[in-house]
Length: 150
Length: 414
Image (cartoon, rainbow over all chains, first blue to last red):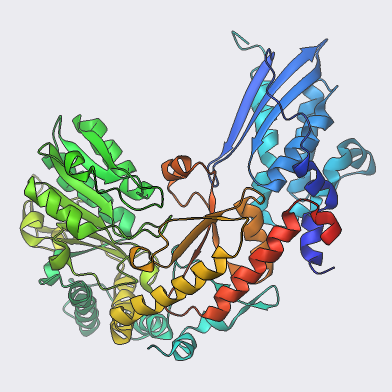
């Protein structure tokens, strides 16, 4: 109760993901790789993806940074598993929209799943970048599709 | 001893609250607050004698010119610069260093020459020299640090050698608080005929700085970190060195005579001040210098030393954090940079903000140094003459709670 405002930001799910990040490993033979850096704080996220029949079958994430960055990376890595690259990109746009203050429909919120717990970040504008870093890395990864050598 | 409560009353902003808590402003290395005298100097200029300088024959312009040049004299006296023409107004310390790099550096540094920096440098005293080195084929050399963030002087006399053309060093590290023994290093540079630039952004606001004693050719000064307005800074340069330097910017004010074919340069210091300057800013900085001189820079340093020792004691009790930089307050300015592997600095920053405590988190424009320390970023509390032991207590107490909040098993403790 002591830190009610902060608890809105640092939901239990966020702190839990930060302590036990999912898919935190580097894939040895990825089909796609990408990364993103936040020059403001120096935080970095790297992503590798293995595709099977056009869907994301495996994802490896190395997120260095604050709890918002790490928790979003962990949740996002779970959320995109099984999606096509186009679906993953739609989810990215949906999340970015939520950070930008867009009202999501019930169906959209459903697709976001646990990522909805990050809505509190909107109240801390300087931290929005932290939540978007993984999505920048995912976007970078998706954009490497079809590049020579990948 | 300074009467800190009385000093605090001179700073209107210090009475505000943040998230319902009294503001504990510990981000002075980023920018300092302004005493009423500075704020009034700005509004007085705009309300009563706003006018351009060195141009008109009308009364307002002459008043503005007088006050603007008085401010230059104040800054010159403040750092014992002798002639006021040795003070060039700039936007900030970064511009001061760029001026030297572009004007002096590009004409005096040649292929194979060495530029010596420390591992502590702020990007503003690193990137300009990287550019000069790349353009001229010169080489950057670095003075290394000891484990506790001091300068390792053992190898310094081999790093500074006959190839050294310039020694460019920070006086006090913005990232670690280390006080660099500039005088000793300048002596080594002199003995090999090298020029000396000192980045005074974190020293001039906090301690007596005397350019004669330091024996430097250049000193970069930031106005807003020493209670002045933003957008005003200064470069001190030795007069005989300035005389030989090519202008940095070209245009009005810096010229003597102009034809369609060419131009000749104005006298110092105007030669380096093209265009309408930040008149209000310079006058405001003059008021800040008056305020600081009134407190006495020895007293300011003494207060900050005591407060730094108090803060070091408080932080020493927190096992979860690593504190960087020297433990001895004679070798440290009022800057306390720390890191906890349990909590990322940004999370700490957000937590402390909820408690009204303002600190800086990030790489402090010293990315290579963060890499050398093996951390992505640090949290940094930085003190000034208006800070109190009570504010340090608030910081330490809030840190304890933040470490509990984010630490393992924290959910149960909430």
